[in-house]
Image (cartoon, rainbow, N blue to C red):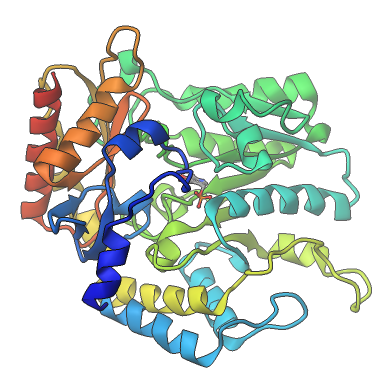
Length: 446
Ligand SMILES: Cc1ncc(COP(=O)(O)O)c(C=O)c1O
């Protein structure tokens, strides 16, 4: 990039037009945190300070930043095919990427529907679940079950099944016919656990209660994150996901794993479904599929679900759903290059091998004032901080700011938690650096 161009990008003189998402705009605009470039494990600010990326962007740059093969693939794709219609036409890399994603998914999760984000993936999965029952003559199955503290993006489907209060309470009546399982977290029984807590599998039995309340004939699907990420990293209790699967099977309910965060290596496997040896009916993915380099999401469906739709006259559309940019050529190119990198650098296995080291480093923060809990799983950690009286979320926000301004590290503040999830290329020395810096930031804000 030329110096002139950099200058215009790095020195905006008007911060007012841009309404930032999920950001306190006024405090941001008083002290903007501007990122202008990135490479591998680091971001760089407008004044050329390096920041260790402790969050893989927003849980997405799993292969690290600005990796040459991905950059080159996007450039080549842009030169060859900018766009072709996603409906009624297709381009070869879309099929190639679908095949590659299906090959990474367990069991007969072989059919891939593309969209552009995690939120779209969730809404797509919910719609596929509803339509699946409909085309099979079980149209009474319209109820969707989510979970308290769940995050499934920001579409109306996603916030309806989601369980994060602030993401729901401003937006009206949401989808009708939704119920929620309880969250699986208890500080009393699980605090400072490395990996999946032993206590809590019984929370899955609440699904039986909902079945008794609503009757199975009205329930289409249950959607959960195998590990709830955005709410502060809640690993599933041991045996919980297996129990959910068994109850769904008993009652003909589809099980959807929202793997937007857990997909593509975060937990040391291509998908969390593999780590937990539980086969869901649908998996949503996004983020890591392109290592954040181009917007893309999707849903992977088991063969039987796809086949249930393939029964009508051949000239009739089977699923009335899709996006202009489904399987966009640039995103497909980014996705293929990303999957090559994951394979060639064995990044999922690397995450698995680093997990114990990462968990140990995280637990060194136990005992730091105001740290109430630390949860670790794969290359993810959630640190709960004590609330400041009358100002929920303020301490975590201050830690994030302090980490950015003084420590040169990017962390994620989510409510009262700090979440860390570095790119899977992180080194052991960088893991130590990350937790040293986060510890200092927590101590400094007091
Ligand atoms: C589990 C889960 N589902 C859905 C989403 C929404 O993804 P997006 O922001 O790409 O719409 C997220 C985002 O963090 C997520 O963590």
